[in-house]
Image (cartoon, rainbow, N blue to C red; front, side, top):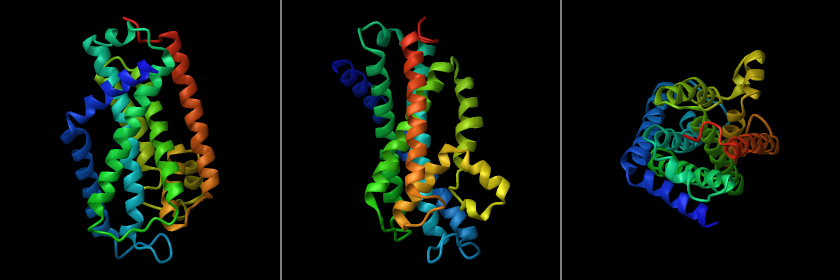
Length: 251
């Protein structure tokens, strides 16, 4: 696994050296979501019995930050390497496609989880939040960040320009994240839109992670973790197959 260690170290250094942009900026942005939405809707909305809207928002915002930053790490790294041509220095050494995939996903998970912890710390003076089921929280945070890290690898393989990656992020990742129940419970939706939400794998990551804090959720956490693991297996299998074939990776 020497290839994995070398690539993972490279990717960790890549985002940690610009931590103001890759870690602190997303934390501040997520904190602004909490301040704005809580200020506007706090007195008007209550999703779960005994849970204020401000408190309800925090787990969803934490997971949203984890997912978006895990995706951004692997996808942006691959596209930038392809555009500058230095991807060749990663392809030339005898790294297996499994080591390549695992290193990029691991670094994405670290960045996503780091931002998530940062959001929790930043919101702690504003809300009093208790974790009812810490193991569920850990499971959904790890699996969710791995899913988006894998999706980021797929997007990075497919995209050859920054605008293609931006289109993927703006038209796939961002809508799927915002329409996954971050700001609302799907039980407040009409039956049609509730069914649409249940087809969104991002919803299960958000809902399961929220369950770990309140012990309340829109679907059972076991259902959510199965859906998340199925998404992880599917995306990982596709990414590994494309990497093995060298699809859009070889100059």
